[in-house]
Amino acid sequence: MRFKFFFIAVMMFPLGTLAQRDDFGTILSVEAEHKVNKKLSFGIEAEMRTRDDVKTVDRWSVGVDASYKLTSWLKASAGYFFLYDNNEKYSYYDADDVEVTKGILDVGTLKRSAEYWGCRHRFQVSLTGSYKLGKFDFSLRERAQYTYKPERTIDHRTIYFDEDEEEYMAEGFSDGISHTYKSKDKMVLRSRLQAEYKTKGFPITPYASVELFNGLDLQKVRYTVGYDYKINKQHSMGLYYRYQHVNSDDDNETNRHYVGLSYQLKF
Image 1 (cartoon, rainbow, N blue to C red):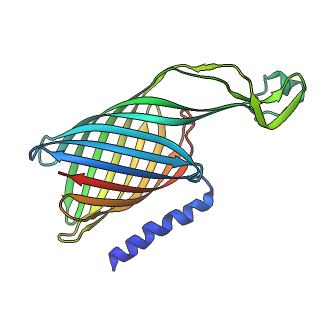
Image 2 (image 1 turned 135 degrees about the vertical axis):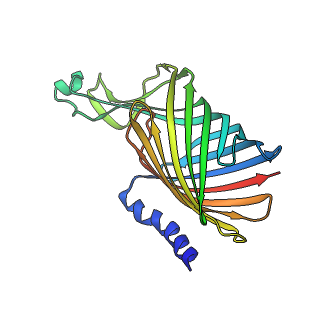
Image 3 (image 1 turned 180 degrees about the horizontal axis):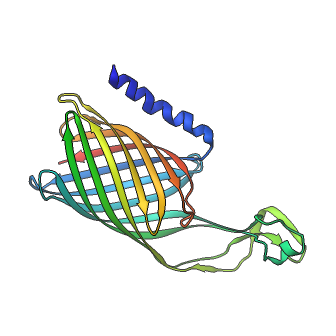
């Protein structure tokens, strides 16, 4: 009965929070793990994300990692991920723009936008400590993550105000001028606290976690609830809900609700 209430809560929670009208997306992932021995294992993962209420593909990614069990309660891992992002860039008129000072446009009016695909390279190292208390498994993962985004030149940007006609167009038009976005890198510390509830002989493992992304300040928080279903010794699937709260607009990210579906293979 407790499991039934948990699953109902997991499925209903997204419906209630969606009323806030943050963005909504999905995450689909496939993972494979090869256990070399009791301590060492290697893995590969592919993922697709959507945004804009599932209307837009947000990101494709593929990555590899290796993990080593240092002790019965401590594990170390390292990995590399290649990310292919659908970027959206926007700029808005501020009080210093001529069009605003002349009273033609208001502060905050959309000025330019661009949408383009670009890649990122991500490297990460992690330490995960775990502790078992009855049927609960608690874990704390500390991950140092470095991401490099190469320079990218696009053919044009969309502008919304015609200076010659002094006319603003909501749909905008191409300026026909190439623009280069400079390379950038970013280092964050990701701290994730997770709790799992395991019952021997029961194939479903519910869990909940909270993860903090820290740079010079708190940049992002992710809350996740879900469960994994063990089909057999090799195959399992997972279903989860995630809410992402963003404190920084550095990557044009936004508060977003996700529903995720995963498949795991162990061999």
